[in-house]
Length: 321
Ligand code: GLU
Image 1 (cartoon, rainbow, N blue to C red):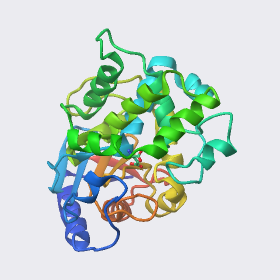
Image 2: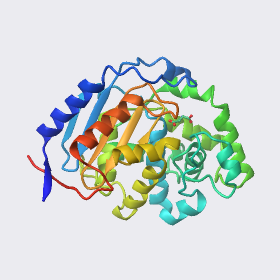
Image 3: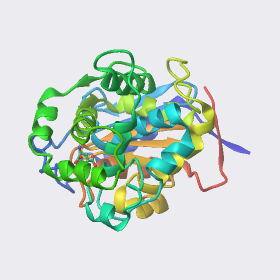
């Protein structure tokens, strides 16, 4: 027996989650990147993209916020697509660090690899590996083309965020050069860091992130555009990376309470993936101590628990009209 999910049920549930959580005052905007500190804290949106291509949403779902670390997922997929899943494992790794996203200690403790493409060190290494298109700006073009295919629409760089982050990313500079010391970065460190900083500064909406999650949930076929973005064979590895470290040092607590592999960013966005069923995204700027949006995680957890959707559970779902 499978439970039925319809657009109207999802719409009601998203509204219920939104109404319950919208006045939550927990957390604070990221303050180490000046642009993010100034984003209106009350913004809040939730979007779901079902695997049949239906998108359901509530709140500020058309506001383009900084994608930040959610961008680590598309670039990791691109590297897997270009080199294969094994090369990503060999050159970067797939282990959780258990330490903050920008930890230098994690690199020192695990000299042989940056651990996972979903923390800063591994993400900068992933950017260094991207194979360029034929364009003179080829690596950047490869990253943005892939991100847009995953989201199913154009994304715009938030120039002010890029400048703000470039002017203040001293910790990330140390990470890039420390990787060089260990031969774990595969192109010029400054250039690779610039690609990483730029990808983090792309503006994205919850609608676009839900569609990106929906594409991962649908084995690489974008459920809205119908485009095949990557080979189905790498989907389980992508979801395993997200499940392992998507919420940084709070990942275990998150998975235990929500059952949905999800990736957060300090811009306030969260993208969750339920293989075969849906992508789900939420956005609200105030963050907890690990850099994860307080309201976005509450919203996704509420919806998952209410539906009984859990990647570790047995419940089956059928999408109906
Ligand atoms: N660009 C941010 C940084 O490197 C991303 C951090 C995040 O979203 O977790 O610090």
